[in-house]
Amino acid sequence: MKPLVILCCLAAVLSPAVAFASDAEILALARDVIAKVRYGALISVGEQGQPRSRIVDAFPPDDEFVIFVATKPNTRKVKQIRHNPKVSLFYFDPESRNYVSVMGLATLVDEKAIKLAMRREADSDRIYPGFPDDYLLIKIVPSVVEGLLPGYRGDKETWMPARVEF
Image 1: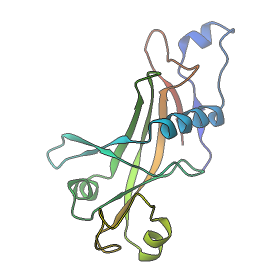
Image 2: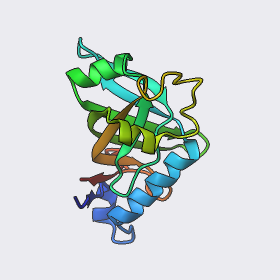
Image 3: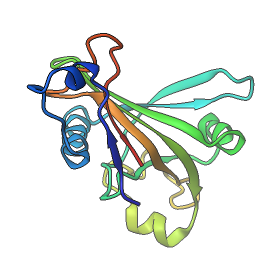
Image 4: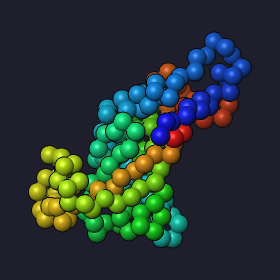
């Protein structure tokens, strides 16, 4: 799946001096922000329709910007994703005031071979003493990645950030 970039700067349309970024440039900058801050907030929708957020130590995005999150199978987020797979991952760098928001669909991955292959040092026996039975992966396939990124601060009128649609 090839991402299509939509740059959201009205000012860029009106002023030829403002350059458009390619999808690859925007995604590279987004990867840099994610790597710098490491932890993000995973937002899922609760049974009552209320968004719920929590800090997660997600895996870095892969080549298609798919992001995995490790968790226990009995967490609220798993129940919420089973009910509604629409999620967002939000990363914020307070030092530079950059952010990345990854919106997409989550699926639950419980195949033992995949869990064994993807387990990180951070996913220790202290956190998952019954590994692989008490370890579940959430796979987030993006539909949109957007953010305020170095050199791309958003539209001056609407504040809409740089955006890549998949």
